[in-house]
Structure formats: C-alpha cells, structure tokens
Amino acid sequence: MIDPRHLRGLASALALAAAFTAAPPASAEPARAAPPARAGHVAPSAQRAGSAPSAQRAGSVPPAQRAGSGRPARPMRAAVVLPTALAPDAAERAAPLAGALDGLLSDTAQDLGLSVDLEGRAASRSPLDEAELLERARSSDRLFIAPRLDLRGDEVELRLALASGGARSLRVRVERVARDDVAVRAAVMLRDLVAELDGAAAAASPPPGEEAPCAERCRGRLATPARSLGKATLAANATVYGGLVGFSIQRSSGSDDPRLLYPLLAVGAGIGLGGAIIIAEEWDVGVADAWYLGSGTWWPTIAGHLIYQGRFAEHAEDPSEERWAAGLIGGTAGITLAAMGLSLGRMSDGGALLAQSGGGLGLMLGGLVEWAARGDVQRTPIAGMGYGAALGWLAAAAAATQLDVTASEVLTVDVGALLGGLGAAALASPLVFDSPTEAQQRAWVGATAGGFLLGAGVAWCVTRPAAAGARSAGPSWNRFGLPMLGVIGESVVGSRRAPALGLGWQGAIP
Image (tube, rainbow, N blue to C red; front, side, top):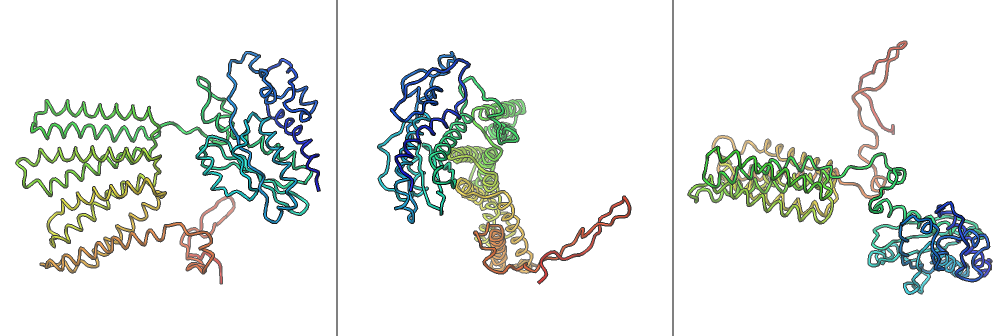
C-alpha cells in the first residue's frame, strides 16, 4: 500500500518540474528565484529555475514581460478538478491513492496557470458519465478535469478527461502505470492535455495582427482550406438570377422596349454579382451552401410561374405580365427560407443535393397527383407540377438542415425512384392505349406513382448504413461469391505484358 502522505509530498515537485519542462524560455536573461506559493511543496531545483506559473501566483512579473515582449499576460482560466472516480471493484483499495491524486492534480492545475474552483467539485467518487460531463461543460465557461482510477493487477489504470467550457467533445488520456509512477504520469498527462487545448485555441484564433508560423498552423493538414470555396457557384447563380429579376421587372411592367430591357438585365446581373461577392467576403460560403441557396432561388421561382400559369392565368387580364411577378414573389420567398436554413449551420453536400432533388421529384409527383385528380393524362398538369415543386423543395430543404445524408445516398434514391416510376409506367402502358377511360388513366397514374415510391424505398433500404454487427449476425445472400467479368489475369512474354480478359468467380468456395 502506498503512503498517501509520501505521494502528496513528492507530487508538487514533480508537477512543477513537468510544467517547467513544457514552458519555453522567455528570454536570454537568467530567471530570478520566485518565493514558493506553499511551504514544503516546491523543490529547490524548481525554486532556482523560477517556473512561470509559480511566479505569477506569487505576484512577480514573468520574464517574458520584463524582456519587453509587449504581450499582456493571459488571464487565468477557472478550472474544476473533480474528485478521482474509482471503479466499483477498486473502491476500497484505491481510496487512499485517489485522495492523494486529488491534491496532486489541484496543485498541478495551479502550476499550469489555472485557477482551481473548489465550489464546483462533486462529493461522490462514482464514475461520472461522459454525457453528463459534456453537459456541465457546455453550460459553463470553466475547465473540468475528471480523473479516474482502476486497479489492473499490479498496475494502475489512470484515465484523465478534460472538458473545456462550451466544448462538444472531450480530450482523454488513458495510461497503465506502476503504482509508484502514478504521481509522475498524472502530472505529465494533465500538462499534455492543457498544452493541446491551448494549442488548439491558439490555432483557431491567433493574436490580432500576428499570424502563427506554418509549422504550427498547418500541423496535421496537407493543405489549408480556402475561404468561401462556393464563391464561384454563388456568383454564377446570383448573376443569372439578377438578370432574371431585371427581365421579370421589364415583362411585368408591360413594356417590350429593348432600350429598357438591356439596361435592366445589366443592372440586375451586376447587382447579383456584387451581392454574391460581398456575401462571400463577409461569410465563409461553402460549395454546398451555395447550391443549397441556389435551390431556394430556382425551384420556388419555377413553382411561382407554374402555379400562376395553371391556376390563375385564365382569370387574369394579361397573364403574361402577372406570371413574371408571381415568379419574383416565389423566388424572394425561397431565398429568404434558404438563408434561414443556412443560419442553423453549415450545409453538407448531401443536404444541398437533397434540397435540389426534393424540388425535382416533387415536381413530378405533383404532376401525377393532378393527373389522378382530373383523370386526363392528355392535359399538361401545370398547376400540380408547381405545387409539387414548391412543397417538395420546402420539405427537402427543411430535412436537409436536420439529416446527415451523403450525396451518393441521395443520388441512389433519385435513380431508384426514376427507374421504378418508368418501369411501372411501361408495364401499365396498355391501360392508356386507344381511347382510355378516366378509370384506366387513373389506374395508370397510380401504378406509375406506386413504382416511383417503391423504387425510392428500395434504393433507400439498399443504401442506408447497416447497424454495427448486422452484417455478421446472419448469412449474406452473396456469401458464396459473385461472378466477375473483366481482367482475370496477366499474360507475360519477355518484357511484354497484356491483360487476360475472361469470366471468373470471386468469393469464398463453400
């Protein structure tokens, strides 16, 4: 059994040595000795070296500031060192070791420049749930340090979790060490975790007017991503839509004078292009963000034209003028809703494609619904396509902000829906030969819509990710292999090589 007093007596010296090792030299001037913060807890070597955190706690000025660096001292962050949690089977044997580790981590945290808050400590040593730890970190601006001990034979498994205020993830270190090395490894692990956290924060927000060296900024990345990768896509959509706005204004005014048309086209396109450039400079617009915003531009505009043409044009005095105004209203509403959707967070490639796909598939389904209601497939379902495009885009755009889908999954579902609809329409085509009745036409439309939905459902079931262990739970339909047509070997004659084509079987032989 380890004497906790002996462990606590050496803990602070090891922590100070680890902190001094991590700190870079501030200047070439020899550091002055700093008085210890607590008597009996600072090793003589650490006093001679004058560690920076201890000097700050004692009220002295760090060497970097005396050297005239001009950089203000970083304010101390509040930290909460939770009581060391113990595994249920090691609660009695490791209790003294856990008590000594609490004091060690508190001292080490202060030596690393943290202000330990004792009010946030919990009284229980039961293992803390990680979800609960993250929830406490999100609702606070403090740094939470959660240690845990478990006995593994003659070794001790030490687990240290770090959750910063407002973070969505934990930084965790786990090591198995000998009982005599617990103090050393705990101090080093805490030092490394705090250093990683400081490095990530420095990389995310460098000091004003100063850029970190590339060795630090680009560590772990092959290339630095460019800002506003979707600038070109956004500019193209905005320019074309700006020209359409100018054309719509000219048409809705009742004028067909080209002397008015071309200036309106140029002004509209210029305003669209300039607005896109300003937006891309102000915000980081990705390619998926630009295409998502483009879906909110075009599908509602198309829906406005179709709804007005199929629903209200026959009652208007001049439908050609009012139709363009309806398109402008739909496009403005769509851009507003798409911008509200982007305010919830970044858009993925699959989400942007889902919004575009919703408008197209909704247009087709809306047309089928109008055909079924009228019982006449010879008449173009203009209004139904307009309503379908609007509702389909709205539903898909809302789902894109909540679902995490990939572009391949969306494309597969689209292809499955189209193939299913075309196949069902071909099989049911005898219903619309010669002079079909309304019932026969409705039956053909119902079969087409059923194949459309069935194909989409089958494609979704095939492409959705399987649960963990689901593939190994039962026998697979292709467990004996599959036929393979293509290159099955290679023919070599001297220095000349040629592929051997043929039919083979790929898989395990039963």
